[in-house]
Image: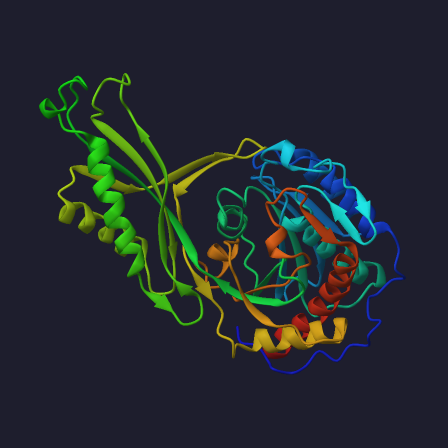
Amino acid sequence: MTFSADSARQPASAGRPPRDAACVDFLRRLVRTPSLSGQEAAVARHVAAEMHDLGFPSVRVDRIGNVIGRYGRPGGPILLLNAHMDTVDIGDPNAWTRDPFGAEVEGDILFGRGSADMKGGLAAIIHGVGQIVRQGVDLPGEVIVAAVVQEEPTEGMAMRVLVEEEGIRPDCVILAEPTDLHLARGQRGRMEMHLSTFGRSCHASAPERGENALYGAARLIFGLEMLNAGLMTDPVLGKGTLAVTQLRTLSGSRNVIPDRCDLIIDRRLTLGETATRALAEVEAVMQREGVRGAVQIGAYRSLSYTGYETAGPEVYPAWLLPEEHPLIGGAARAIEAALGRRPNVIIWPFSTDGVYTMGVAGIPTIGFGPGDPARAHTADESISLSAVQRAADAYARLVIALLRQLARRS
């Protein structure tokens, strides 16, 4: 499917209701409902109820627990709006000056875990499409709102289930992750590696009788630091990176030389880097440093709140939509018409469900959402309520403009 560069000429009031508190009230309910990954059942009920209340003609929960709302004309092009329902934990509660689940409002700012990442975006896409539903806009295709699960630990996994197992194949995807109301077109990927160094244990009073796996790990870590410095760079996404993030010895006592040391490596992948290549680079460092050990790609095994189990490698590819892709121009014009300013085109610093939609499935994907990305996962996480409401208006414009653009080219 290709896209037209034709602009979205919709009246500024298309699909826009009077500003009311409905979207804000919904967002506060979402923030007040804890929803760690794998524990999204309660917030999913709120999402489904809100879709029903707004008049979505089709609302269902799929096998993994995604809440899927649909509106429009089946058989035409499909535009999917994505937002995840799960959040990270609050971390140290003493670092918060406000109740993480209080959804406190001060002026234009709402505070609480998940407000920026990404319940603000979730509320905005539901209410943005709700504007279209209430107006009864005749769309030349179908819009799907997918409130998905478990993005935080295994981004893209829920979207894989939706596409490959539920049979929903959109023509393009908008991710409502925070962009500060700008337009995102890509991100670096990531993978996790598990590495072990091996030695030979003995009493610590005579270390020469053994082989200290921790010393092997120390040489290896230095070699990995040097490897990181020389990793390849993409002119848009930037440099690939490698960081050792955890180290653990398996010694039976503090006076025993450890015979094994386990490390976790966080590897950020830029365009052109593959998991196979990244693994081989680490193996080469081990060989050069003379370290006995083994390295492998990490794997996840996840159980959703519906009891659906998934498993796979911890590999999430980089992706980038070309800046000249007509989806970028069409979306930018629709956003400008809604907000009164042209959005900047940016690259996300973090990972998203786009690792599957664009990185694996090749579905044209962009990002647009309320919230400052720098506020995600922080103590006193917050979001501007006016930005959420403006985003809802922009989503209504985006849906109409992009579906008409798709229909003209189908």
